[in-house]
Image 1 (cartoon, rainbow, N blue to C red):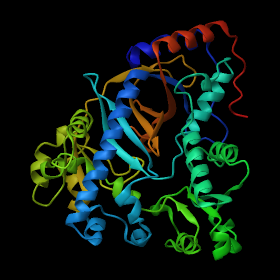
Image 2 (cartoon, one colour; image 1 turned 90 degrees about the vertical axis):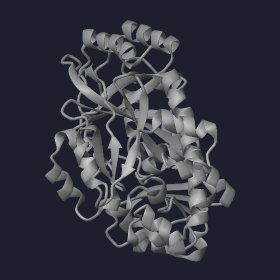
Image 3 (cartoon, rainbow, N blue to C red; image 1 turned 120 degrees about the horizontal axis):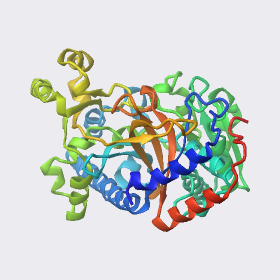
Length: 437
């Protein structure tokens, strides 16, 4: 079954029973309670994503034989203030890759990737927690499904393995005081719980940057500490001083700032470069052709030609996050696009528009379906693919929380699991939803 066929009977069941879903305390956006995603499609996209990430690693290794590290940092627009915090060994050898691939469903039923968001600040799995609690009030255990596991489980296992290998006995989940989480002050409590479960014999703390203890910066304490950063370079307020002192103490920072190389949107143009494709195998090239839309890096020479075709293009800053700066050519003017790009031509891409389908999705109380566009975020953590962060928006094809998109979780589900889920929901008397507690 496809996305629509899976979800229509689910929405019918909930609509008939009218669960009183309300926004959880502290959330700045009302989460979408639950959506279903065909397991076969999830597995196919995940398999191609593994091939594409392997292709990226192979291409980068080739680029490093052709160019200096300084040139690579410039090529991928790595912010100057964190260039000394790039771990080149991880770029050269791979490993510890943590991120989310954004997936769009086109009008012709094809799943395509529009972004690779690589980095540690992953709030999306909080929606897995929300979905799990919502289903529990309906007598259903999310953990009972093949793909019902939270990405935080994979992340916690990675942290546990690294601590064991390197004999680290303290885990610090490091957040920033200045960061305003869309999910509220308790944003990373689910992550803290999963890491404590996986690392039961270790000290595990979730703190803000001003709470990082001075004694942990000694060589002795640094050698026993793993730090997981929960923020981006653009959110750092001290120029990176604390991060440098943490690294200087001998602590393992998971991860450093090489993600600015691997998540740069210019990769979407490089994936189609003939000279770089020559180093790939046939499977990798086929995966790219199936999933990666045609993309060009903007330059002073090609901008005017791209503007002539802007109706079929999306313009994106190479290192933006959360949908910041994304311009749909069909919704903009030439003047606006020129003004946004300015003199920074090499820091933008123009990507072929993926014509998305819209779906009639219910609102918070399930009784007013509205046509909305959907984007799925497929999480990958150290080669493990786990779950889909969902965002939907009825006002724009540029679907993100910044543009008013409703966040949620999509469960990859088989036809057999789908039948079982509907049967369970139809026979259970819903309890009052406790999600605002």
